Length: 228
Image 1 (cartoon, rainbow, N blue to C red):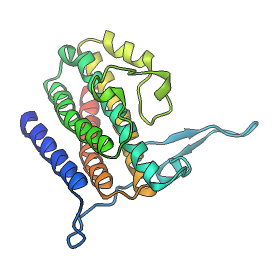
Image 2: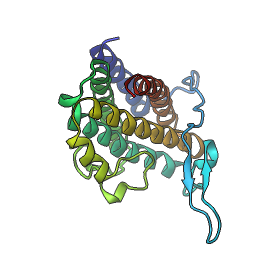
Image 3: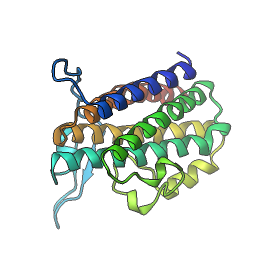
């Protein structure tokens, strides 16, 4: 599948979700949803003084519930805009220095898919009268900032600098490693929204993100195995 066709599909899907959210859903025909499964990447939970750290997976790796379901939906959309924005930055930092054609193709596809999703999430937030993160207009704002250090899967400033300096096969492997972790973080965010939120449009968008990025994680693992 070409990156152009994939990006067009994502744009259409995002537009459909947005239209659903702004126009209102008919109670007669509820939109089908899938159940997002928990990501497999472990999360390190610091132990109490004198106790070892714990490696958590699945729902155990999610933070405790806080706030109302509406707040969970709004927080998901705001945070996912920031998360998507960093993915776009991670592609732009290295795309012209990637050596492997399949890695370059996947990088371009990810950037093309996530831009229309950012636009859809921003419009949803505007329609709800909620704050839109500035990264919706400029993905480079705050990328790697300490303000987002606790967001699952986000690359650190040091990792972004390392990625920017990488070349050739080293860039391929580092980008695949960082983007796989970034996608795993997005999966955790989706699972948390499914647990805490209630908005059908937000849940449906989360479903699409979960399906797409789960498949891409599989691709990236295969590429890493081949390039290692």
